[in-house]
Image (cartoon, each protein chain N blue to C red):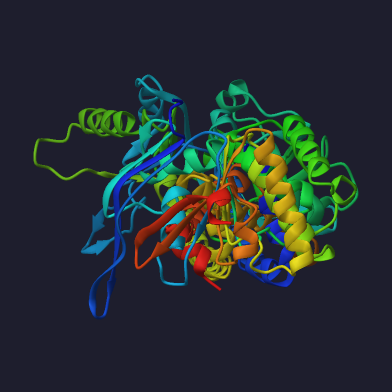
Length: 232
Length: 406
């Protein structure tokens, strides 16, 4: 057996609310192995987004442990987490989250700026990734000049630019029509075929069907964990 | 990395041009005001120093004491208590570079059909050195002229103009008190002194000639005033003590008896004048600095707005790997760039206005590189100081919270 990319043990997250402490996530255990393609599903409020933010090192858990490529990152400081976000994983958002004033190329190259790469390296890598998602000819355009589906491709290129082995996507097709969604899912499928581990959150069954494994959340807990082949 | 961030800061400044320009304007006015005020202040100092230097530096004037006759007290320099021997003895003191006994008064000069009343100074050659007075035409008289009481004279520029007009005074003979004097030289121009008196309206003749032929004297060799120049400002206190003890000893004054002479420090008066202008220029600079402070607060205000506006951008940057330090640097760099650009423009504006003032009003302005450097350093400090708080606020944002911000 290979070492898991992600292993969470008894992971819990609670939020302070007016009504008291609200447990969004209650002791979740999950292992994800290299090369897996997982869809995390569940209705809104089930804790899947909270879980995704924890996996993406954007947030820290209240309780439990999170082993990312073998090391426990549950209680690392902000800067250490920033380095993990930069080098170890790529994150794709529902709302694309491109910087509107920068060209597509500069958007894609941004993680490399924080990795300390020089200008030439940044340019070359950004070009390569834009070509990979089929948008090389728009490199100098601003995000507002292209469609939503294209923007999401750029966001994926940005997530890939530091060559992480893990891509996390939170509702990546949530803002797209069904045709464009198909295109994006095909792109994730291709990346997975190259050996990149893909974890995505969705509440759409059609989208989840692209993944090889489906994990369902309800009320902050995992209620089912099946291979897609078994579900169908 | 820093280069990439500079580019981004430039982009961010360009994204909101009017706002950036207005923020900068605060700095432009602040720095401009400081530069102008310093230029004017230093100009005033320079003008005063020029005047002081025409008096001669490190000078003491020793005056003979007052005397009382039949209940009537003369003023200072009224009694014949100093003599040429005192002056010669003073010249031997440590730290003394020039000693010149003088006797002066106002007399009418006559040349041809012209006449002119002026101040006549009888003295010895070291007087010219003590007062750093040069001869522009002809030559000074020497010690031999003093010894033999020759009737030679040096004339100031004002006298030369009024008495001789366009003629060259050197070699001409004029009369003082019916005595013919040969003009041997013309003095260089010194302009006004601190009291506003024309220093060029004067004639200098040998002391002995002045006493014998022009003023008369109760005792030959007695003088009312001796000018003493110390070698340096540091030597002045020592020279003063030396003069006092020497004169008390020479005049055989008993312990406890009052001095029969007065000693005045000319430089001290001049220094106090210089001090006044220095204080004024510091005051001007301080007032101008307030506008620099206001400019800095403007930068802070705009940076705070900018951080709030760009919360989401900060969240995105953090999500893809920006550390706190990176965000801090980015916003700090923006503040410093606005501050620096404002400073540069302010410097140019200030220099332009200062030169304009000089051109249109003739007021002396001094533009020094150090003042410009100081303005630059202050601008950078202001940028960092007032940019720090907003930048830190941005860096401490929580990535999740920042991403949720709409």
